[in-house]
Length: 76
Picture (cartoon, rainbow, N blue to C red):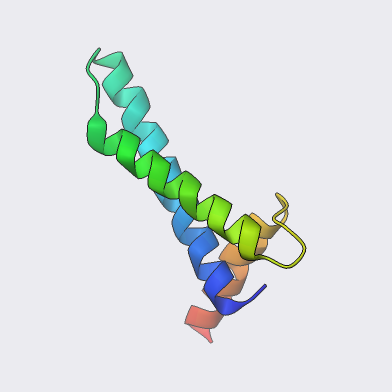
C-alpha cells in the first residue's frame, strides 16, 4: 500500500470507530446524533475511496498492516 492509502485507512478506521461509539451512546440516550451519523458516513466514504483506489482492493488484513506501517513511519 502507498503512504496515502495507509494514512487514509487509519483515519477511516478511527473516525468510523469513534462514530459508532457515539451512535451507540446516543441510541442509549434515545436521541439522534446527526454529527455522529455524518462522521460515520465520512469514515465509510474513506473506506470506499481506499478500496476503489487500491490496486488489488481492500481486504481486512490491510487495516492492521496500515496501523503498523504508520507507527513505523512515525517512530522511524
